[in-house]
Image (cartoon, rainbow over all chains, first blue to last red; front, side):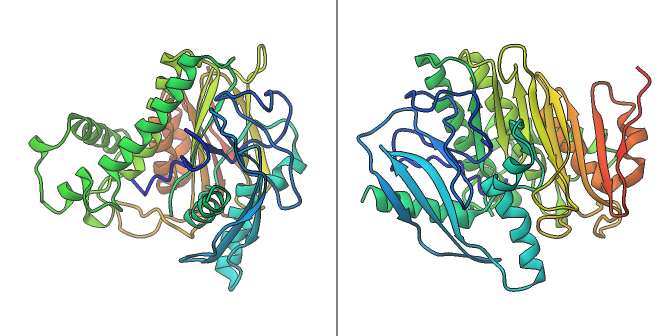
Length: 150
Length: 236
């Protein structure tokens, strides 16, 4: 299979799962040290939320990730952490050089951030299709998290 | 490009569920090590270049290759595990791995969950007591917008498309890129098969619905390159 980037960002806590598909903040309790989805408030750039089953003392603040060059162009994100938990991921750079890249970014970024879909419907648990995957996104996020705990 | 897997667990957290979640993540990493075509040392890569043989690979690999053979039969050859002539079961592995991960969670007591592998989902139980999961289907014509929503309990939903990276599905019968359908969504009990059928649907095109209608429990929604939507019509 394609490189499965299970986003186990061990630099944050035991297991951190990237929950890119948590479009709203309706149900799950936000702070429980639990595997339940921990929704995060949306920032202007949209959200990618992550949850850490075990909390560490953790960092606070916004950490900018590396620029990761993908075959589609540079990708860069910034992660905001509160108490070691990711509360927001902002996309700083996505490919935009030509039509094809714009098309990719047009699909991928809304899928990554959920922002557009959140605006469209507040009652969607997840989205199928238009794979939101991006190795660059993950790598940049990882580097942001590394920085937070360096 | 990697694939992101995410989990959403709606059950009250317990130590058993936390363990199951860790096991499910470990499972996906294990699958990646065995099946990644991007890793030269994976069992699949070694098998593909003849560095190992079928009787030497782990049972899991043999199991998946059996499933792949079944997938080719079930889809009348519209699904292939040898795209470009080289062994690559990726098209089946992701859905299968997600379905198994969902099973791991369930066995650990997490019965209201979904596991999402790059936009293909295995739903288990429901979103909250009395409320089924609601899954939006991405609109290939309008980035970031939804075509429709699918509501269900214990349901798999897979979407294949030609949209994100241009056409990436080739008709194994002709060797040419599949055209005519922008995206195909298949729902049914098991993600392994929903995913395989969604991939085959891109190749099959408009014939998809007649074909899917003959498979109990599975339904399709296809988006043609021309305006419109096609649903599988059933008389059940």
